[in-house]
Image (cartoon, rainbow, N blue to C red; front, side, top):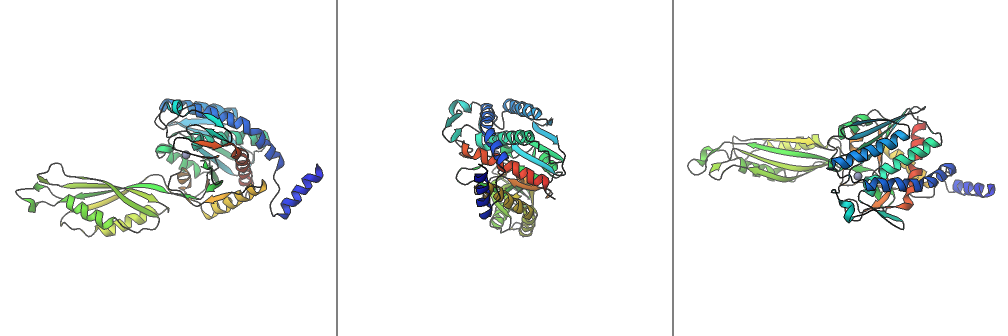
Length: 398
Ligand SMILES: [Zn+2]
């Protein structure tokens, strides 16, 4: 047996990879069945973003589980925040969300079911897999006596699928006080990887102030805000701003047909791929709107920030490379997804730029936000191993 272990270690060394932590790997294997049992319990609690009763049951469940693991738990605005005190120097944070995109009663038509390597259920991947992974990673590492962190914080929020309106600032301010944030959204079943970027979201509002007059008797004394709005939309529709994309999507003007409209408004969807995207877009818009078509009208544009973009920093990329090396220890390849159009709370976690933030430590799966959402069972052990080794490395880093 010893000879075999030595041979494996030697082979790994020759391969350029570090040998796996066998004890941790075995502990991960032992956690697979308990994790799947937890995941089933989580799926059976329906928790759509607008289902207050379901989300309260989810919060009760996760609070109880976190307390059993020894955490001090705080609940505010439906957000569950758990804190563990350790003996090390670094502050680590893990996040996952409790809400799903599904409506109450969904289990009747999309029940929990197991089928070989796949386990199906609404929200099972996105993001109940992240919650189960965090609970069982903590159980495993603490059982093994690992406490190499000053503080370990877990946040489970109830509103990720609706933009984290209540929890976003909380995640951002908490993350700013930590050294590392590992976000546990799922990754796609086709490619086992972690995510390097995700767009941020904002809303642009353009308002035009003109002057009302009788449309039939004295149109020339009015200042037509609808015509001016149309002009401004056309001249801002193809702005090329690095890190920001704007599409006008809604508009309204006027109250009645026999009056030159005094005011008009348009709203647009903004996607951000750079942290200064809003400022750059605002500047580009201001330059364009300075040239009116209808004299004596006043046009303004305001951009309201939603979820910030997530962009792995240089430090984040170095830690992603470490994650790849960790996967190499157990003979697996970890892909680095360049980006996604969907948002993530890793954006809020990165807002201050203080913590190293990485995304998609949850299980593999697919069909999220669709009809046949599932996780793949064979990602459970690798993902338990990956997250716990990342926490060990982060805790021990300088
Ligand atoms: Zn999610």
